Image (tube, rainbow, N blue to C red; front, side, top):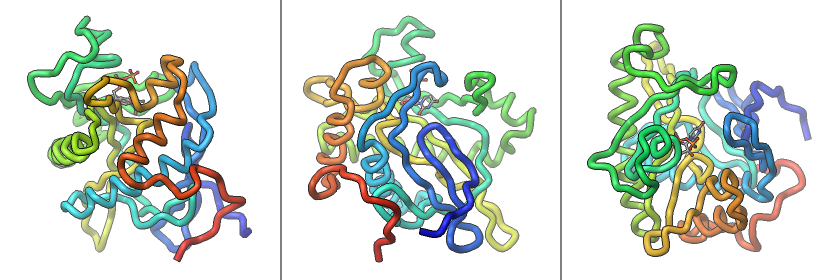
Length: 254
Ligand code: UDP
């Protein structure tokens, strides 16, 4: 195996230099963190499942015209993505009260929201991702007003599409977090969806039982964390044959 240059290591993923200029290899780890890194753990097989789940969701979104950084899956834990300039803002879309929204406003978890709510958080581990307003984002130059308009429009499309997709397999999309990047092509810039979409950054509840099938099982020590991620993949029809076993090193699929 040739050693590739490591560009960036995050909590759940590693980015390596890609095979061609303008590409990166995104490697999905089994590591899990919560509460701004205070809780750390390993969810066995998570990286394999999230690689698959994110591939599937990004591909479906691309088909309906949502631009994404995703190019193709390379192997069990890696996907080829376009290199983008990450906008340091996490966009959270909420349909049902949960997590920090429930805590902040004292709204019981599970209360449907009168309409979808968008929130922004500034990506900074040192500052614990503080919540920010559009004013902060544009005044501090993290994104231009036009970038922000594009991010909101794309986030709402993603929400509509994924809410329907998940409802079709008996899951409620309670909330989720998106990240965007700037992609430069022939002097032109467009905003594209980046990072990943998986049970690490979505809340997914079974429609009938309200069972949580996402990272809250890890955050709240609910047990059966791996099984929850597997169940999401199973319902999407993409559970790898033979279960989420790992491969020994990268092997490119043709
Ligand atoms: N989220 C995320 N990364 C973060 C913070 C939140 O992916 O750093 C996701 C989280 O999984 C949930 C949504 O964004 O689907 C809203 O999270 P919330 O603000 O309720 O924070 P939490 O309760 O996760 O601390």
